[in-house]
Amino acid sequence: MGQQPNMPLSLEDLPRAQPHPAPARRWRAGRPGDLSAPAEVPWGGAFGTPGPDAGYALRLLQDRDSGGAERPALATVMGARASRLGRAPVAADAEAAEIILALAPASPVHAPGVPGHGAEAPRRLLESLDASLLAAPLDDLRRRRPAGSG
Image (cartoon, rainbow, N blue to C red):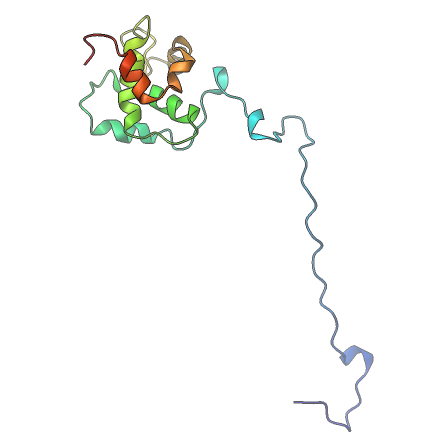
């Protein structure tokens, strides 16, 4: 409905422009410890091997016939391998973890440092493994599988 001619409008009655927030300013890492690029995320050693949904490795191992003592070691290697490849664990990582543990010089599966024997054990296990094996393609690992390991 339009304005009636006999009703005068004052300045307060006229429509006003609505204020809008200013555009967000660009964020910049300026505090100590702020990470400004994905390459700056610490990896390995005391920082572990961060990756998405590493606990899914345990769910994948529930369907396998692996022994109870090997399961924590396999899950640790599966999580580390998946995080090295930038993804969550998949079923093929279980086979890769079995091969990697069989290739390990001191067979960490049966050593006292098996995960489940202390908070430092998973880190010691991963430090004992060759880091290049974690990122190796599964076909390459199958060719390197030791004789008699299945």
